[in-house]
Length: 362
Ligand code: UD1
Ligand code: UDP
Image (cartoon, rainbow, N blue to C red):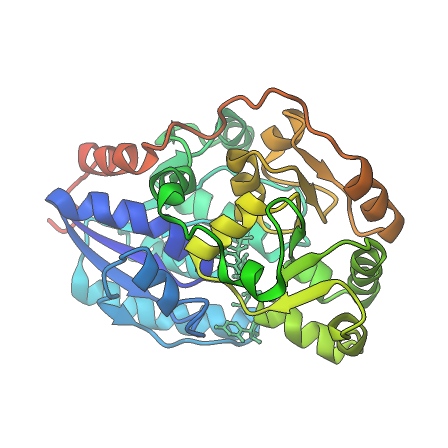
């Protein structure tokens, strides 16, 4: 079986690491990097740390508006897929690379499989929601991390080819959590103690590109009066600079520690050692749950509703007072049931790809 896997952004490298390893045991994988993320600490570092094979092709698409970026991916992927003639195109998550991969393949009538299918925020203001809907509706195999995701697809009339396999990000975390550094470098750099700081990540367009929301989040962080370690996505760094928030946030007289984007192993260690995590990331919400770290999500809704239902994640939005109040008072329950699978999702995905393979070229 020949599978062309398409990745392009940070969380996709994490997800693809385990599936790629599993695929290559018995099958032929052609790995395509669209080039959506290109900074070494958003891309190369993940390939090195997670031992991901070098991409067979890098399309070098880079940053652009949604339309221009997706269009360039589509054109380049079409040429590549016509040449490669894979049995499956495998796409991950909900980025522009996901949508472009699914669309390019579907137009060529190449079967598409979607890892992390069925997630919904029910907020079409998010570019990711559009990407997920398109990818799911074009896929022949839909690998869901939860029953909620299976139910979301059913509501849209998709029930064929849908399988609850668990979450491949859980596979990655369970396999790597024992290989993280004893102390992550930024903790040493700033003298931060185990459970003695808050870890923050923000990159969602609805937060970075909305000046009022970003200002509120910054006010919230500054009001906390305890150390906040804040790895900055380049999008967030630029937004803080453009919106006049940089000087205040980076001043020496506060407890905010702005750092570069972290590699996966350091990041997991930083999550594990944090007292509380403040985030708008999808992946980080789940990792906080698996690691047993209380999470406050800087959004009005989440796709990972089970973490909220379990009482370990609270949707705090972007109001500075609510953030402060919740950081001070939030206590999750004792119990933390297993969510999103047992760490063997990748194995199931590859088994299903093999089981449902059809010959489309004869
Ligand atoms: C993308 C995904 C988002 C995902 C996130 C993971 C879409 C629509 N969004 O958001 O779902 O959660 O990746 O991190 O696909 N930039 C750099 N260096 C890079 C990459 C980007 O400086 O290597 C800067 C550029 O200014 C660029 C901006 O970040 O314009 C945004 O990058 P883009 O890939 O469009 O979206 P993300 O915000 O990274
Ligand atoms: N991550 C990382 N370094 C960072 C921030 C995030 O390694 O500085 C990891 C994080 O642990 C998770 C993944 O990147 O595995 C999540 O990616 P991101 O937050 O960019 O995207 P999302 O999950 O929101 O789509």
